[in-house]
Length: 196
Image 1: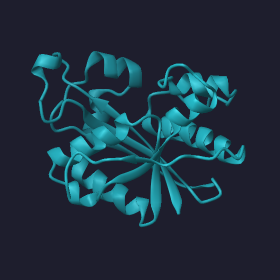
Image 2 (image 1 turned 180 degrees about the vertical axis):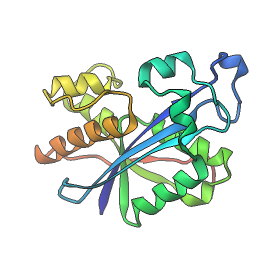
Image 3 (image 1 turned 90 degrees about the vertical axis):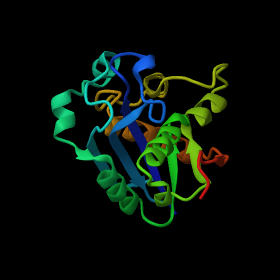
């Protein structure tokens, strides 16, 4: 089995919550993933910018956080094409690893919006590396930032946070750190939003 450590960046309505599309409040605009073998060694990477269909103008918070511009998005590829390429890249025998569970929730919501539910049959099995970090270090909160965890573990900063491929790489490093420490990882099963 391989591990697909994935991160998504998403945009939302630049005009506030009341102006958002109820079926797609957060539109994925970037996918970044690092594939690890069973020993935790990196074997491949996936990184794609997505040209949005719903929110073509960047929300100011998202733009400031990620540094992604409308010009960047316009050079992207449409979500259905990127998703098909990503799922083919994942292969047959893999498990997702994410920093928290929101990325997989938004992935499913975006897939449902584009009627692509059949590309990912559930339930989705994944490791929530954020929860693992919080439990292992007895953090009162079950939600800490990826940057906090990287600094806490004294990992080297290699790139800006809040870019999908960089965040996937940091999450992969933390996941691999726990595996090398012999930490037993409990499997978390994420129930999909739609039935297959």
